[in-house]
Structure formats: C-alpha cells, structure tokens
Length: 444
Image 1 (cartoon, rainbow, N blue to C red):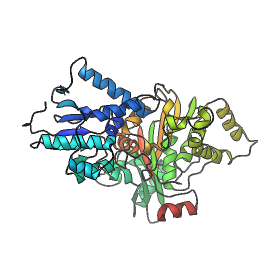
Image 2 (spheres, rainbow, N blue to C red):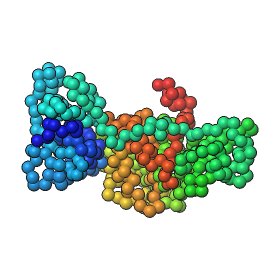
Image 3 (tube, rainbow, N blue to C red):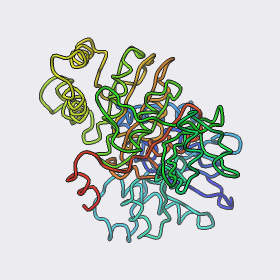
C-alpha cells in the first residue's frame, strides 16, 4: 500500500506517456506512481510492429518485468534508492459524477476513474493524472482531478526555437572590410562581453557595406560566409546561404533546419548531399509516417514500397526540382539517375532504421517535428563514423496528436545540442517556394 502520510505526490500515468518515453517511471523523483491496469491492456495492442512506438511498448514491458520479477505486485514495488513506489491499480467502479458525465466505458474513462479513486483514497497527498492527451486532461480537471502533461523532455526556453539570425546594424565598415580582405576577425572585436554560441550566424550591416558571417568557437573568431550554390541550387536569402554553408562544412555533423513550409529546408539539404556525393557512400532520406499506423498501411494495395511511396512523395518532389535544373543529357542529371539506380541515394521510411549502423552516410530526416525526443535519440545513435545527419521540420505544423512545440523531438534536440562544436541550427524565415505559398503561410 502507498503511505497515506507521505508528503510526496502520486502520479497516475496514461498509456501515451509510456509510448512517448518508456523510461518515464524513473522521471518522477521520490514520488509514487500508479499504473492503471487498463494501460497494460492498451500496451498489448502496441507490442507488435516495427515502428518506434511499438519499440517503446516492448521496452516498457521489459522494464516492468525487471522491476517486478517473480514477486506479487499488488503491494507496489520500489523503483530504487531515492525513488518512489510503482503500483498497478486494478479497475475501479465509476463514480456517480463520472457516470453522469461520461456514459461510454472506454479506456480513457477507466484511467480517469482510477485517478479519481486515488485522489479520494489519499486526500492528504496530491494526486496528478499525467497524460499527453489534452482532452483527457480537460476531462480530469472537470471532475476536480489535477492533470498535467509529461514535461520531462520539454523545451523550457521558447526563444531557442524562434531564434532568427542576429543582425548588427550600423556596424563598423572597417571590420566588414577586414572580413572581406582577411576572411575573419576576433570575436572580441564585435563588442564588449560578446559571447556567441558555437556556429552562430550573423548579418553585419555598415553604412556602405554588409557581410554574412559565422562564429567558430574553436578559434574564437568570426568568419565570413560566402554565397555558394550546391548542385544547381542557389541560395536566395541569408538564411539559405547560412544553411548551405553548414550543410557543406565537414566539421558540422548534426544540423537542425527549422522554418515554415516553402523556406527550402529539404531542398537545400538534398542539394548539399548530392554535391558531396564523393564524400559519402550513401545519401539517405527519410520521414516519419504519422497519418497511418503499420496495420492501416496493410490495407493499401501493393508491396511495402508501393504502400510507403505516397508518404515519401514530398522527398521525390525535391529530388525532381534538383534534377530539372540540368539538361537530361548532362553529367549532373545522369549522376542522380545512377545514384538512385545503385541505391546510393535512397528514400526510406524511418521504421526500418532501428538496429542499423549508418557509416559514412549523409542522412536527411524530413518532418522531424513529428518525432518524439526518444525517437530522435534512437536515430542519432545510429550514426557511425563519417555520418552527417540533417533534421528538417516546421514546428508550427505538428501532426502527431501527443506532441507540441515544446515536446517534439526536433525542438528537444535543438535545445539540448545547442553550443556543441558539431551542431548547428538555422531557422529559415522567408518562404521562397512562390509568392502565393508565402502569402498563404503568412495569412491563413
């Protein structure tokens, strides 16, 4: 039994929290955790499959087995030194208020009944339902049960995600001349106590000149960034110029490109990858399939490739844009055809990435805002020697029902990796797809 006098809190976990992070039960310090029996029932439905969500379900089952072993579990089990107890709570009858409010007997309402029962059973302690489902949290609060999102892997500094390129107006024209003539100057020359992050980019504007620049924290110097194209794709603005500079830099091994639709994130990454085809054995492109689960894909006609292709089409579209900047008879056009034919340029779903070791590859992950922090970690840990990874995404267009701007994997990675030598983040602001697309993105 859980102590009724203990000052710590009691957290009741929803299924989606476990599917988001299978190590979640260790993230609540010395507080006690209740796992509704309904959650175990729901996890059974997710254990089979190759997607990352299925992996979370299987791993949590193993974690639970390690904790419990052969012991009887109805009294709760300690999660370790400095941690609380974990207890599985069997189904509880619906209260009159719950029955009057929610007539359906569904898993969410069974979890809610256990949270309500626990709050009443331990009135001296704070009981909190933890769920990624906003609607369930609202239902709990309507019954007087406290409810919260799972916040362990959320970004706390929103400015990290919205950060644009820093612009210095009225900058010293003499220093800009130094950038053009010598290529760099000391970071201390910018201003007193100036402390930029690793690979941070700047726009310097003087009275008669301007320059694009980037900070190198190893040498503690500011270097000029030149406007260069990559495999027929020319940058159209400062952010695209900075992006290509990072994408072409062999020292930067992990890149986050964020920005609204039409800013050129995926196109730039793909063009840079093909431009450097001699430096990498393989170029891989992938994106998460959010709309359908593995079971739903089975109802579509065709083999595995034909089922996946509709969701990979945006990547094929970007490849087509690059190809059509060249004459079909040109060497550049033929190179892309050869890379696809020889599978040196391969478009693949993320579900097949687990267990692989990617050495000397240029790996582009599109729509990364629909990945959880754990999924991002799983992908990055696949990187072998010589591999470069680029994550692109629009933090305003999250399709996953249990992720938001602060809890998605792309935001989490950007926050945790900032100021690392091998990491760079560029937030692209200006849309370049077309005037119509830019207008729609801004007004609709």
